[in-house]
Amino acid sequence: MAGETILIVEDNTIQREGLAVVLRQHGFSVLLAADGQKALELIDEAPPDVILLDMLIPDKHSDGWWFLQQRRQVPRLASVPILIITALRIASDEWATSLGAAGLIRKPCEVEPLVATIQQCLGCG
Image (cartoon, rainbow, N blue to C red; front, top):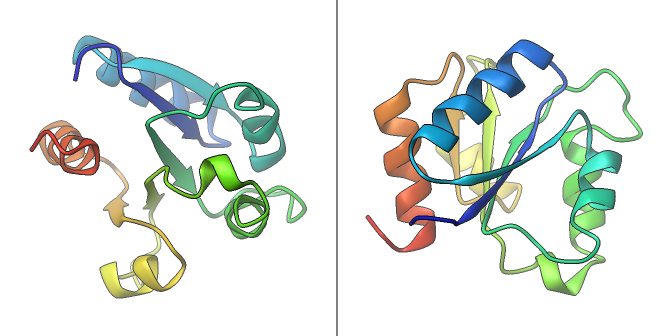
């Protein structure tokens, strides 16, 4: 798992930075983006190993739904697992997988389940 790259797409600076600190403490490399557009720009050269994607980003032209649509047009991202991170209480694992995600993580994120879910996506868990 050491050195695997996780892209965090989250508009809330505090949550984004908090997730980054936790993941770095667990040996991951971390890329940060405030929205889907910035995420695509960051991964233009090399895709990450896992993407943590917040769906509710204020700019509808670069929110989580927009990013998932764009992902379909970028072949190198097709195999990158996406974990949706959300505070939406109505969200479910079935909803996340119906959108093409590998799973769902509820906010606020608890460290051990977060890391375990990422490890599963990486085939380490």
